[in-house]
Image (cartoon, rainbow, N blue to C red; front, side, top):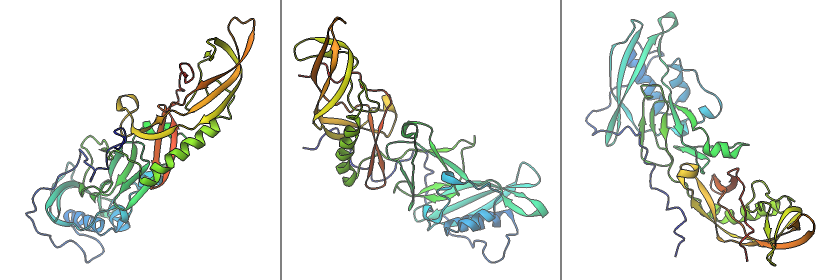
Length: 351
């Protein structure tokens, strides 16, 4: 029987709460501007811009705008592979804008099964040249144990030297051209304009789940971590799944403190499983370790009951993995990230 703690199977598609739903398709494609170097009207400019996006011609689309093109990770999905094509510009209308130099343009796009509407601003630039004003749409991806962000056929593998901040910190922000996208292999989603308040559109990834290759690699990563942790001569090795709080109960029933000459020795590795982390404790879309078999290790050292006599001891301990988050990247990469709060004690109460 499968372990009930293992995450449920991957969702068939990303259910994004902000999706602009397509209505029933009722229009037919218009003749999109495509024949001379420069469109002559705001509506032709918007039509040409959206046609360029649909065809994956990112540079041509950006040439119609005054957008400040981002760099680095923010621009990871300003790429043809991110865009889901196969849609048409169905209707473009225009009306006067807030200022005499601006025109508000409404565009309807469609594909088999539905349509979506976006609103744009075209203004006169230098030499009365028409430009589309700041059309890029900002999306904020909720961080989680899956570090690979996938839009269309484009993947951005997030990496950081501060892994905990990457997992539970600020959302990962990207800028997209208005168009149609598939987030994490989900259904086609129209992303045509930003929120009215300028805030980024939030994208919540599907629940993370290890691939078969990653599931097999988890135990290897756990064993490697334990091997490194055993080298510490500390009561609470940082980022490690075992510790003592400075008090030890020996097999002879003595409670010792003032521990010195600490040495950890492996008896048996724990068996590791991946479970969904409690969102109330660490946030959404995070995975953590659970040891289905706790494993064994021993703590050696010296301590005292009365500070008059120092006693050498060896006492059994166990492993505890609740403070370790699981990090997934690509199809086969796995990492472990400590939450930063060491286990209180994994020695007392161990027979």
